[in-house]
Image (cartoon, rainbow, N blue to C red; front, side, top):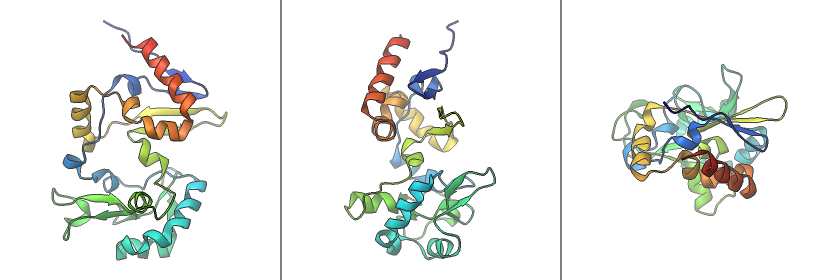
Length: 206
């Protein structure tokens, strides 16, 4: 039996080995953006990102639902969740305030195959209205980041049932998680870091 890979370290970043070995590729046609809706908390954000989001509000405000606007008016674009993490505000205990259904009459709380969801922050950025795409935690998913007090960063592969179609598609394309997430990993850690990660992966993997 082949031994599992050890924790991988690139610079001051520790990565779980399944980021190298597991396959993943988002399949929006199947999942319809449900990751913006499911769960019981918003997307992790940093204080700097909150400032970027607030600066983008005017550009996205009219695209947000009335409920989302009400939540933001009441508590702002982010809050501290029960695990003491700073996350984007949510509506109905589920969907991110910046998620908007593209269907006229979505199922309650985003459930059901008729609901297609899109991030209004990303929509505005890609239309050239803002410079902020979306929280890096969203772009990096299914990788979740943890920061330690000594400055080290930990990256873990998060398994979630709503992403089962992404796993299937990744397996069909033979696309490792770290390859699928090249753009956000470069955006977060830089080109040199990502090149080193690829070199480490090639050395470790058969």
